[in-house]
Length: 80
Image 1 (cartoon, helix red, strand yellow):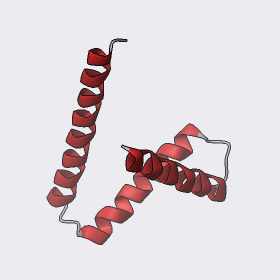
Image 2: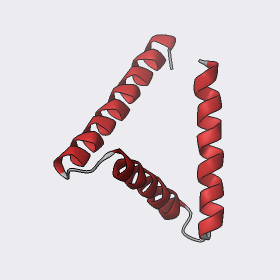
Image 3: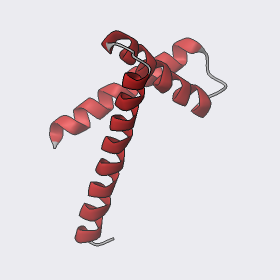
Image 4: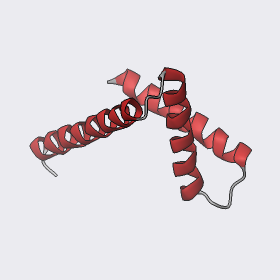
C-alpha cells in the first residue's frame, strides 16, 4: 500500500468513526438522554461488543480487556 493510499484510508476511517459518533449523539438526543445516561449507554455498548467478541469470557475478564484496550488506545493516540 502506498503512503498516499494509507493516508487516504486513514482519513476515511476517521470520517466513518466521527459519523458513527455523531449518529450516537443524535440518537441520545432523540431519546432525551442526558450526559450520564449517554455515558452509561456508550459503556454498555462497548461491553456488549467485547462480550460478542469473547463470549467464553466472564464479566471481570471482559472489563479487564476493555480497560487494557482503552489504555493502549490512549497511549497510541498520545504518540501521534
